[in-house]
Image (tube, rainbow, N blue to C red):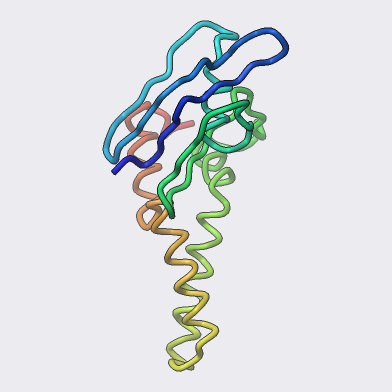
Length: 152
């Protein structure tokens, strides 16, 4: 089953046709590269997949529970932060969810039948699972090492 499908997708800006009846499918485990000249529709294509830009015609079908994200082409980081700190700042939603998850687990030890805690923990687990973020810290370290950025 595809994680996302783009079916007969078309988009134009004024007279310029950017996407013309495009079909695209991405399956679990596939790696995708989008390469092209400036102004040829790469960002438009991605924005339609995200749902941030409506199509003129065609459909986008996303598998339930899957999220798609796109990094901005221009990023404004605080120059006083290390690379790791800047990454952590950008991933604040994940870090906040992990922290809240831990806090609620401690509270649950004192009040094991608290349904509000259980419900919130379930919501947090779904978020953390969807971002594959249980071991986010080790993933960040691995990437920093791969790009020789640990010292920065």
